[in-house]
Length: 249
Length: 222
Image (cartoon, rainbow over all chains, first blue to last red; front, side, top):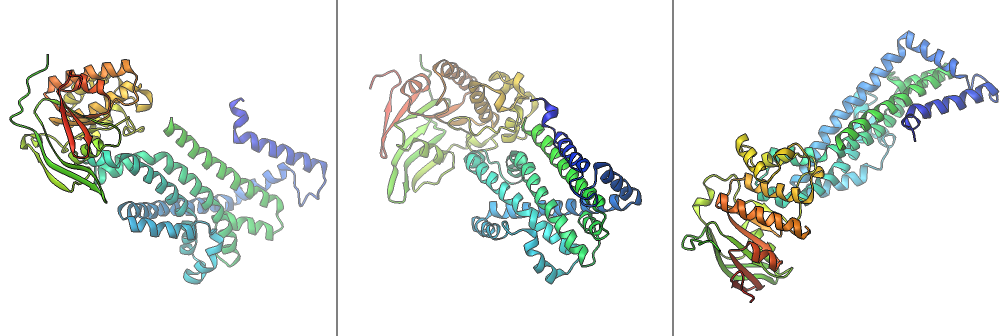
């Protein structure tokens, strides 16, 4: 199959063509199902007003901050679980408890503890991102330990040398893959949280913009924001996949 | 003709070595020595405890009784106690180049020495390649080069040629013998392959059971 046929842009092109076909057929009222050019015009208008760019910047900023904090937290958890067997078990239990819980499920607790604040948003984001990173990296670290423990002992490879050359360099592929999973979980959680937080007065990123467009009955703008969210998700996914492929080759 | 080995000043002297796993005695009161510049082969069937013995010598496992005396000459220049060439090539790291493998075990290795070792095992031209780009023989040579990089006078080898075809084994035997002579290395090689033992060993110790270690003369049919 040709390379361009596998591109995500092809998927978008097909969706847009089908969308436009349905819109032109006028099976639904235009307010509910606007044509592609109406959506694009609404998007341009949002961009010109400055709302779109600032909301994108806010959402991306929050997710990047959460990603850095989650990576640091996962690194500490990994160090503890590699260093102490009993900690590995305890953190494993925590992962089993928290990993299946969606961010929205812990939202009421977070609101109770820290209120509807940026801190609360970061906490929920970290909850969504840290566990997939830890779980995937833990499996890799265990495999590396099993394969190289005797070798490292025989050649006195310990401390930072073992940490960097064996554990870190040996798990870059898995790290990228876990970041990809964390990103998609985080992105999903962020949009939901922003909608809820926006509803109670913390007017923030793209999630809130969706909610706001719906309130103003700006359906074309709403679809436009959804399109932007999808495009950002696909762009990041593609970027990470490219880095991962380059590393693995 | 086999070389004369100085048996008066052993590099490693093992006396009454005993190892138990729970109630099972794996090794019982074994005594032997490693002389300078000799290849000592420890033979025996699978599961008899050869690799355990090697792990104890490499300080990878503890022992329950007896005494191991390492000659102080062993620790003059080396960075690690005794480098081990493990069975197979699984301990090579897929993300590292040939050169990086050497620098991992010997970070202070000088460039000239690195080049000399890699040229000796015919890997200098492949120094920037990763294990996935190397053939089976090259990988085994890299595992050996990694042990050489530690600059130890003693190298421990745990069935390093298992799984290789006969032609490849022959070329590796020759390389091993040449490098061993050139560098004056002492090697303890564990194997279950009689032919390999005969080809490489200056002395062969056959582990018959936990407590029975019989010295065989290479070339004899016993």
